[in-house]
Structures are given as structure tokens and as C-alpha cells.
Image (cartoon, rainbow, N blue to C red; front, side, top):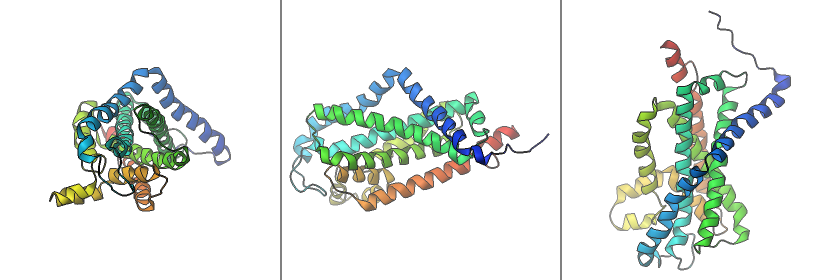
Length: 279
């Protein structure tokens, strides 16, 4: 059997890449448009947290002054970056589930055998997932505004950049998970071991100094090493017109590491494609 690889015609690289970009990202957007309930389900979860938890914990956290805030803030204002991170986190896991489904149906094999660099194709999948996250996060910002969480127009460009970085990192995490989840039936357990620890062991719901003050130093240490914490903090600082370069660097670094791991996992000489071929 011939093992001659499909060659990539360099002079036509630009048009081929643009067509692939439209096909891959467009497919993700069309899926989203055809499933209007998906947007509703993505917003119900953070909206419940915004309405119910802020009502219950308003008097607990509403008087805290934590960086980057220089005055007393309402708890719903504090929670907004964490809930934006929740939207991106769940969408990243949703995109991972979609890739597992495509792999079982054979779509991923067809995609990755296309005459384009594998990194480029996976990058398009990553971009498609991140675009969907940004759309959902933008809608949630508008919904939160209706509930009294207002933002200055001047901070929106920086917030959008922080949201984009966070969406890319969490979509890259979804790519990595799609490599290791072999069957759709196993995905629910994987989500429980990824989503909830990442979300709760972070600064999404409470300032980290409260963990340290309560003596939970090991949880405090885990939260500081949690990439999701840095995604939330990057958006938190951006929401008040500041830029947290340290958190942004961590988010960028984790995104690169996750993408490289996914690229390695989808290598037909190493990852699931080799195992499928052997089977």
C-alpha cells in the first residue's frame, strides 16, 4: 500500500487556506445558527449564577475592596469576569465534545488528511470555537447590563481582547481533551473532572485572599496555578480599564502549550489516528 503523503502546493497556499478557513469556521457558525437553543443553554447557567448567587451573597462579598477595584463594589460586578470565563469554559468543552463526535463519524479523519498543514487545520478549529465563545460572551455582557452590571465604553476594546485570549486558551484546552476522550459516553466524566475544579478553584467567585485567610492554603496555591484564574483576572482588570500583563502572559503561554499538545495528539504517527489505523 502506498504511503506517499499528499503534497501541499505552496503557490496556492493562500487560496487553499482561505477556503479551508471559510469551510471550518463557517461550519461551526452554521451549526450554532441552526441550534438557537444552544445560545439559550449557554446563557442560562451563568445567568442563574448572576441572579441567584448575587442575591444570596451580596452582603457577604459586596463590601470587599480587592485589586483592581479601588472602591466598594457589588458582588455581581465582581462575578462578571468569572461568569464570562464560565461561558468560554463550557463552550470550549462543547467544542471538544463536537470534535469527539466528528471523530467517531469520520469527519476529523477527512479533515486532517486534507492537503493542508495539520497545524493550520487545527488552528481553524480553534478559531471557530473561540469565535463562538466570543459571540456568547458578548451576548452575556449585554444581558448582564440589563441586570445592572454596567461597563464603560472605553474599557470594551481591552475587555474584548482579554475575552478573545481567554476564549482561545479554553478552546485549545478543548482540543487537548478531544485527543484523549475516546468515546462520547466518557465525556461527561471528563467534563466533571475538568470544568468544576477549574471553575471553583479560581478567583471566579471569591477573592483568593479569602482562601488564604481561611487557612485553605493548598487551595489558594492550586488556584494560583490554575490557568482559568489568570483568564478571569485578565478579564477582571480589563473590565476596569487596566491590563494585567502577568495573567495575559500566562493565558497566552497555556494556549500555546495546549495547542502544541493537541497537535502532537492528532499526529497520525502518535495519536488516535495511528491507533485507529492499527485497529
